[in-house]
Image 1 (cartoon, rainbow, N blue to C red):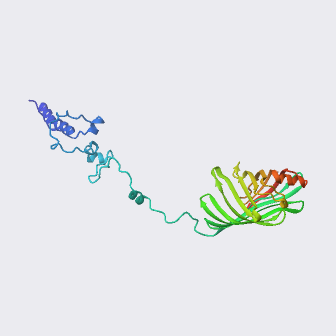
Image 2 (image 1 turned 90 degrees about the vertical axis):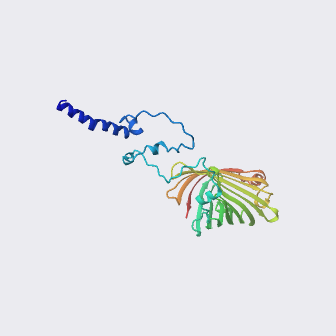
Image 3 (image 1 turned 180 degrees about the vertical axis):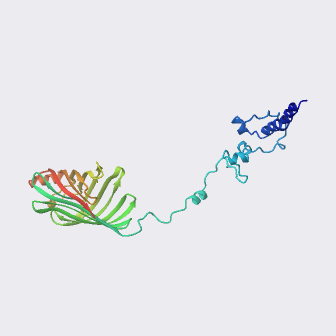
Length: 319
């Protein structure tokens, strides 16, 4: 045998065969899937009883070698980890109590005393009989649940006060958006002054309609119900259109004050304001007011119009 042939045989024996065997021994399913090696043919399965068959480990955990874990290809299984429970058990009251601790304090703004004064309408108007002025405002002081409310509304015509009233209420929040009111109202005009016991609600209905309804009981069995609905439509963050509807019902006729029973008056108006600041906003608008039933008859006898359209301008402010 020549020296070259001997050297070639020795090289194959020392390098080629062991390398192939080592490659086959280290050929994992991941390497075979990437084309790095070829897995040897699987041996025929042997028959064994269930007692002799060991629990098979997950394929991902069995094939995750130290080399693969070092390269970030897989994560070795934690021997101490517990398999997920299947099916997932239904949460119990104890589970919910552990996840969501009970709240011992309600939603409040620190429990302090706050206050606000707001004039929704402070305006001058021009109508068929002449010009006049009107106001409508409210104020409150108190906390988040209990408050003292003051409300006032009135009109002046031809240099004299045609109507004016002042209301004082104890208000209590009965829901996040509604207050229950109980108090008194005193009418200064028209006619002789009178005092009413009052009970009502006010708040925000769905779709952001502001609603106020109040029932009154006066001397001699007189009764009255007023309701007001208004809405704010924002054209921009400062330009706001405010429609308003207000109705008044009387339980019995009162000739001294020129009112009849049933539906007494109804007023609908719209005001467009521009908020120079959030606290101060001038506005212009138009309002239509009409009397019905016995109230309309009293106005006809006094030579006053039954209905009236007013062009108005004013300011709305609060502090």
